[in-house]
Amino acid sequence: MTATRRTLLQSALASALVPTWAKATNPGAARVALVIGNAAYAMGPLANPTKDAAAMSGLLRSIGFQVVEARDAGRTQMQSAIQQARELLTGQDGVGLLYYAGHGLQLDWRNYMLPVDVKLAAASDVPVQGVDVQAVLDAFKAAGNRMNILVLDACRDNPFPQAASGKGLAPLDAPPGTFFAYATAPGNVAEDGSAADGNGLYTKYLLQELRKPQARIEDVFKRVRLQVRQASQGRQVPWESTSLEDDFVFATGQKAQAPSGLGRDSEIEAERSDWGHIKDSSRTEDFYAFLQRYPNGRLSEVAQFRLDQLAKPVLPAVQAAPGVRMLAAGADRFRVGDTMALRRTNFLDGGKATEVLGEVTSIESQLVFINGGQQIYDQMGGIVRNRFGTKEPAVLAAPADLQVGKRWRSAFTNTRQGWPTPSRNYYEHRCVALEEIDVPAGRFKAFRIEARGEAVLPDRAAALEGVTWIDPATMLPVRQDTKQTTKQSGAVFEHSSDVLLWRKQVPRG
Image (tube, rainbow, N blue to C red; front, side):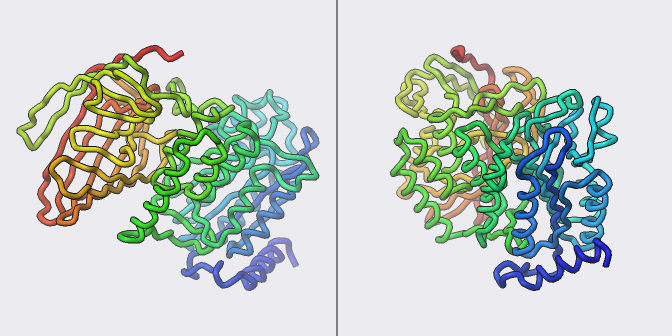
């Protein structure tokens, strides 16, 4: 029997033993995992990648994946495994997953997995002897997959520095329908662990999270990131980039359904209650625990910001793009004396524009008072009070960290003078681009964030839409367009735009 036929037979037998909860509800939707673990390098041998690959293969088979596995593979073996995975996926409208553990490096903004038989003397050897991660993406694309997941535990100390153009792996934006997961932030290295550990640090926690029957892809990797960060005391912080439109449950391969109506409100209230117990805490473990429970909650970004304030990450922030400066994670976004001017236009009032001047006159704890309290923000830039009322919690403007592809949720109630009942507001946000934008204050390379949601009152509801451009250097808006549309009549009752005229900030130390 050939090796290929043995692998296919093993996959078929493993699938027959999958627990009932683990089988995909759509049997035609293939899920195929390409698992590669390389450790036996002549230069820079590693302790755990083959163990990592074996454990990952076994777990993925147990939850319904067909697995193509290669351990201590040479380049030809790796290329053959990629082709085999492509053949299994072709025409299936399926899910392709790459898990790679071993040495990896970047060259000219491309990431390479290193076979065990590499002998790199110069950068020119890398494309010839290494395996470009893009080759896996190309194979998955050619197969016609509906979703691709790439997990790279490949940022160990590089024994071939003369061949790389940078430390660690290069940050790449995920192409459509793709989720990228790195064991550590691009440009940094991950811990392999000792032989006694049994698994690398990242894979240890990834295996733990994948064993949970209803594990959702974003929850899995957010929890892994927190656990690795906590265990390494901030020396290693995993990183993800996603362009997925929907959440994905590993155990079934199906779209995760978000609660709505009373179920959604009950979930939000439980999160708010737990947040109320820790929001003023100075213990990092309280925020780690909260984020483990609510990795993708409505207050998760606020909790992450507070954690970053209390325990500043050891690793430098990943740059949004070459030459673009990012405000450090957890850094205060306001200081007393900061000033700005906005041009506010209401298009339902004949396009009438007014100029709004604001100065930070005081800061108390996390509250930022503008013009003596006419407006109140928090240090994340969230709106606590403005001309439309008081918000609980603050309206989230920008998350704790920001990159293209990031998604997050927020919710708040708005109490407005003269309204007998607060409105309940729900938003889904997504960072869709880093793009040039011109406003009166100048030209900015800013993150474009699109948001959709709804505002609910007892007698009516409105659909909400908004586009906000965030300056990475300050993590504050330079332009914001908003629209609300009543659901009963379809009439637009508010459509406004805020554009930055100028901003002056007290220098950051």
